[in-house]
Image 1: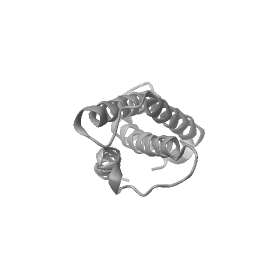
Image 2 (image 1 turned 90 degrees about the horizontal axis):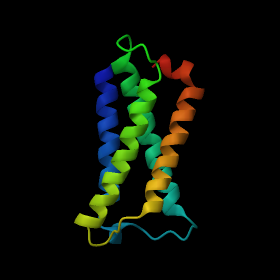
Image 3 (image 1 turned 135 degrees about the vertical axis):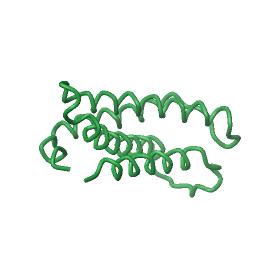
Length: 127
């Protein structure tokens, strides 16, 4: 898959996550399921991290001797993106609040994505 397409995909995923995390929470249907918010954060950052891993693996291929750099860069990017979104929720929205436990759920989703990507490294390298 061309790296430009992977970049577009990663940017679109990032934009969708930013939109849903910063939109008016009054527009989100209420779901009575324990910890659904944390599950959503985990899943968002799992997908976010995987999409950036795919791009960075293609971008760094052949340039860097460290084959795991894409995983590390994607993980760090995901954590900082999640922290930034939480700060923006507290500063720029009236229906949302910053939550440290959301940052933890984001980071856990990123960690799970990195370990999953490493486990499926052979398949990912074919993309």
